[in-house]
Amino acid sequence: MIVQFSIVPLGVGISVSNYVAKVIKIVDESGLPYKLHAMGTIVEGEWEDVMNLIKKCRDALMDEVERVVIDIKIDDRKGAKGRIEGKVKSVEEKVGKIVKK
Amino acid sequence: MIVQFSIVPLGVGISVSNYVAKVIKIVDESGLPYKLHAMGTIVEGEWEDVMNLIKKCRDALMDEVERVVIDIKIDDRKGAKGRIEGKVKSVEEKVGKIVKK
Amino acid sequence: MIVQFSIVPLGVGISVSNYVAKVIKIVDESGLPYKLHAMGTIVEGEWEDVMNLIKKCRDALMDEVERVVIDIKIDDRKGAKGRIEGKVKSVEEKVGKIVKK
Amino acid sequence: MIVQFSIVPLGVGISVSNYVAKVIKIVDESGLPYKLHAMGTIVEGEWEDVMNLIKKCRDALMDEVERVVIDIKIDDRKGAKGRIEGKVKSVEEKVGKIVKK
Image (cartoon, rainbow over all chains, first blue to last red; front, top):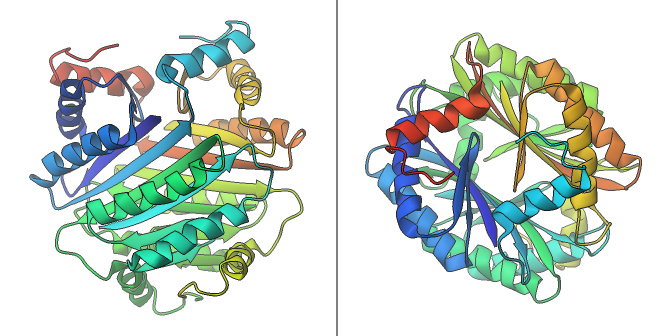
């Protein structure tokens, strides 16, 4: 399955990029395929692997802050793999490669 | 922590309330405090309990459909409990009980 | 259409219920049917009415804070009305009224 | 502000990439900076421009389908621009450029 998530710590000021960087290090070390974009991080893997990863990220932030808001969006399709790139390509082919990268 | 989630099955037509009913039965049997509203279900519990519950709901739907989209939103605040009702009351007190129930 | 939204201000500390109260006052004054729950506010209305309302809430918070994160989830179904209560009832009937209120 | 959105049509089968392609064409024609990723489309612009664009996409799909579910996530920060790339760069610099692109 393919999963997008974001974790926003509250009570730490307006800029949260230090916390996002901490999360990305943990995601990178997980070995799962991932992609960081401006509104979250996309990961692909099995339920347990992805959820354990997100929990690890949450635990790391909750060591430092009192409250976090986490958004998780899952697209779970039987037998589908390689979808972080695959889903984008599928759409781009249909719009005739007019899409800016 | 307090968690809102929704599971939308794709490829089964426009109405999905039969699937939501299936999910609610599983949530009800879990024993966790919960509340169903028009856009999702709110559950309160520890990470493992809530995530295992959502996985159980997902597994039940994936037995019948090929693809689901799941949204999960977590509000995780240290030491906070009873928040399904508590968060609403806290706001209502501040708006002077003008809020419709 | 039926719309759930939440607005989280960043950089104002851990508790944001004062800001939510401000939003609810604006929602209440709009005259649109709505329901506050622990993870957001559900409103029903036409696109322009709902979006203007959310913009009004955002403007009110942006008068006081530097950054907000807004989540909006729309369920748009042709010809459907009265769905804040209707969607819940439809599911409850299917689970045999076992759902806790 | 920077906005991520996705529109999922219900009742049209499991694959929805034809509909996403339709949306991307409309986004591309808008002239707003955007980026398509596997879980949605990110656009940057003023409230009215972005919301009018999303409404246009929704109207185009509602011409063909009976029901859509739309997710919109807004990150609104005073004075911030160029954030589709900027937010990612800010994080990448902090994790020492270990992030895969």
